[in-house]
Amino acid sequence: MDRETGPEPTAIQPAQPEGTTRTGEFGAAGDRAADDTDEFGPGPAEHEAEAESSDDTWQVRHVGFPSRLIMAQLAIDPRVPIWTRRAVAAVLIGVGFTFWLGWRTGLTIAALAAIADTIYQSKTVALIPAAARIASAQRRTRHRLLVARPWGYHTLHARPIPGTESIIDHLVIGPGGVYAIDSERWDRRMPVRTVASNSAAGPVLYHGPFSQRERLAHARWEAAQAAFLLSRELRQPVTVRPTMVIYGPTVPWSIARLRGVDVLGGRSVVRYFVSRRRANRETAITWEQAGQIAAAAERALPP
Image 1 (cartoon, helix red, strand yellow):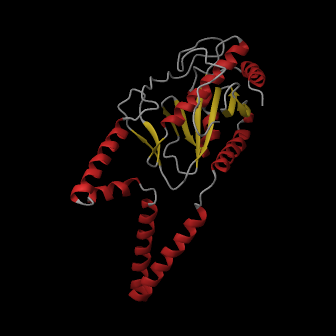
Image 2 (cartoon, one colour):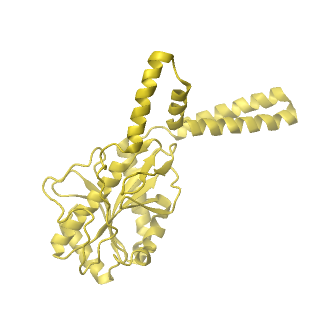
């Protein structure tokens, strides 16, 4: 999986535009991906942010440092929730010990609690190299997919797409259909959320202040490449559903369909696949078909 950019395929192109409905022996296509004309361009939120930034720069030069610029910076700072929680905890601890042992003791204990929390956070949220994060996320998903085997799912891990530098983290094949999984490990200090968009593609996934629009687009592209290769190998249409699994921050939903990609937290992986045959009847396949697709995947996507 290409973590830096989502390059266009150099040797292999999908048989149809992404999201085109397919029908055939191996099921109809999943949800049609909406036209993401702004997929790699700035959306309304980015334009508003740029406009506000320019306005703030003018005010800094002409009328001094504005308070609203400070508030805007704090609003996107991922450390603010940690500071807020630490301050609230210290105040509660201080007030509790003040009534019991006096204000001096309460103040001292509150300060010690804040210092201890600062040290703990600095040791537990240290920066992890990108390669280590990717490997960790892939390893966790691989372990969880082992539990899905009794339900008839076969998995291929870390399969490069021929002619490109991209890698499909996990290709899962079973009664619920075929899935291309992108495993992500993100900074747990920043929340995962969705932001409404004026685009017909629907809401955008955000990690803290950072849009994940391109990550979703790349997940769809990888699934489209897998579908093209499998369809060519079997000479029949095969649907591959893009999925993103997130580790680190809490994902505030069970399963969400965002811009054509199923997005879920790592803890929901097993439940996700156990329920797929019932949830996605249009992409469900038989055990015999799953075996044929798995054999074709071994040939089309060699390790």
